[in-house]
Each structure stands twice: as C-alpha cells, then as structure tokens.
Image (cartoon, rainbow, N blue to C red; front, side, top):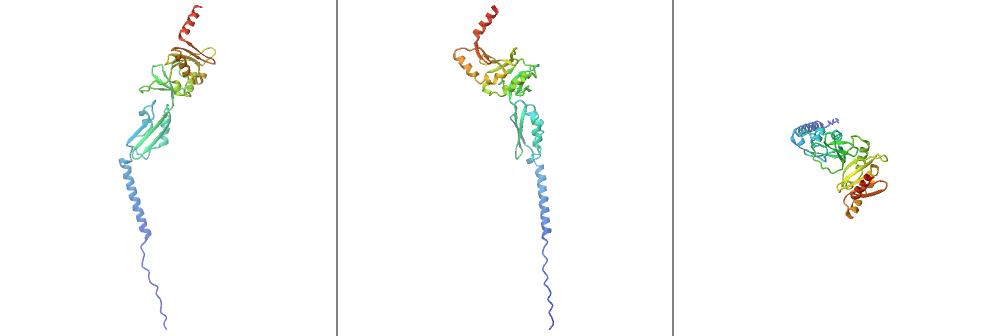
Length: 258
C-alpha cells in the first residue's frame, strides 16, 4: 500500500485589521483637528460680552484696562490668575474674581476695601479714606457722602490712620449721625477728637474710646431729645456728661466775666 500524503489546506488570507484601524484613527484625528481649527477661528469661541461688577471707587475702564481682556479675544485662553493679580493690584480693590459662561460671556467681579470716611485734599478734591488710612481720589466718580468727613488732619497723620482703623470696626448704623470729625488734642489726651452730628449735637471723645462710646450714643441722643433739648455737647470720656447749648453759652460768658 502506498502511503497517501496529506497536504494541509491553505487558509484564506485575512484582511489586515491593524492597517484599517490606523487609517480610521488618522482620519478621526484629521477631522477633529480640522473642526478644532474652524471652531477656534469662529466667532463662537471669542469673547462677545464683558461685564464688570462690584466697583465703586475705581472705574470700570481702569479695571478693564488692567485686566487685559478685550472683546474678540479667545474665550479659552484667559489667564485667570494673572488677570486677578493685575486687578487686585489696584489700590481700592481687596479681591477679584472671574466668572465665565460659554459662549463668550465673561464677568469680572471686584470687592473693594471698605471706605470709612472722606476728606478734602490740598487741591480741594474729594478723597475716600479706607480702613488702613489710604486715600483714594474720587474725581469723576458719583459717590455719595455717606461717611464722616475728616477735617483738619494732615495726610499720613498716625492718629488719622488709627481713627480710620477704628471707624472700619464700627457698624455703619452707628456712624449714620456723624457728619464731621476734627482733631481736638489736649495736654492729657493726644487722641482727643470732636465730632459734629447731623442731629445738631457735638461729641467730644477720644479715638481709643470711640468704638465703645458710639455703641450707646444714639440712645443718649434720643433721651436728650425726649427732654425737648435739640442741641448741646456730649463729653464721652472716662466719665460721660452732656451740656445743653444754653448752659454751654452761659458758662462761656461766666468765664469771660472772670
């Protein structure tokens, strides 16, 4: 018997899947890249609206200028930290934040240092005083005089800076009646001040005692008005007293007679 040689069957050639897969990947990458280029060149990827909120003592124009953000810039290339640092370098600004909403909307929100008083500089221009004593020019800004005016203080006076710090720690309602504060030093108290109120009273006290005394000053004023007395001088020191205008004028006359 002759041995029959078995010839193995030839398997049909299979398509090269890897080659096809690479082509598909390349095509996908190509189209994604093309779409990305078209997207970033289109108006939908650009900044179309910039809103600045929270400012008062610094203008929107100045904030926008230092931010470096302009209409038509790429929405996705804003360097938030750099922009915030530039804005916070402005004198009145305490902190800043950037809020973005696609497509194209950017909001710059600023929080300013609290203004505690106003003053008039040597050129006759209004300035706002911050809690650290820093003076901020207000030329061209419509800001109401809703804080006391400091008169008779030299710029950089340490006692004025201390006064600003104290005013910054006092609740706004307690300052509503105070219209003006002037220095009134004595041999005993270098930090003695005199305050004038909208309710036609004067207050003599010290910077060191101001925050404590103002806590009940409005109640004192109301008690005096209930007695039908509408003018006079409060001396709020270690011991408090009140002198109506009539008695004050009478005492002044007696002193002159002597």
